[in-house]
Structure formats: structure tokens, C-alpha cells
Image 1 (spheres, rainbow, N blue to C red):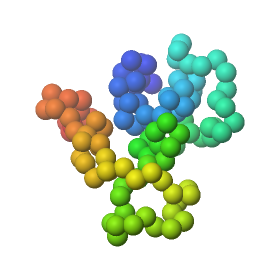
Image 2 (image 1 turned 45 degrees about the horizontal axis):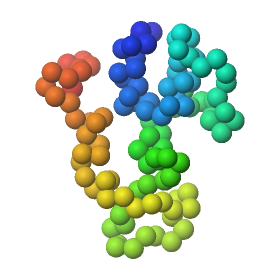
Image 3 (image 1 turned 90 degrees about the horizontal axis):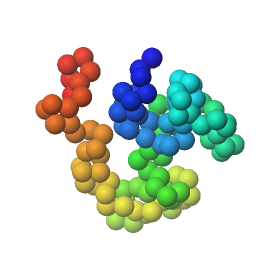
Length: 111
């Protein structure tokens, strides 16, 4: 089990949702863990799930996605559609989790 401070550095990319961090804190019995169970809309498995779509595609309870390749949004898209965001076409959107300086964190010798 990782100490909470070290685990928080990992969670920023691997579990960026606040709800997921709270569940992990409860599972790990960290002192900062919420004392109450999560709301009903948060699946109990979220603490163990892999990186979920909402981590990149939901901000402020709004779904976002890339501009359509055809130039027009697909009718009846997933989840009732989404707000188009050009950020998904810019590598800087992903860089916070996918780009590390040479002195950055390493696992098995790899950034």
C-alpha cells in the first residue's frame, strides 16, 4: 500500500475524478477519507475501475468531445451528444498526464 502523499501523485492521472479519489481513500482507510458513503449515482466499483471516460470528457457536468471528422455532428451520438471542443485536437489537452520532463516520475525506468 502506497502512502497517501505518494498515491495522490499517481491518482492525479490514473484516477482524476474526485469521486474516485474519495473511494480510493476509503478503501485505503486514509485519514482524509470521507466518513460518509458516496452518493447513489457513484458506482461502488468506481474505486477499482480503470480510467473512465468522464476523466477526459466531462467538465462541470457537461460532456465534451472532438469536432466531428465529417464536419457535422453525428445524429444521436453517444450519451445524447456532446459539446464540441477543439481541445481534443490539441496535444496540450493530454500533456498533463502523458508528457513528463526527463527528471519526471519513473516506473520500471520509464517516464
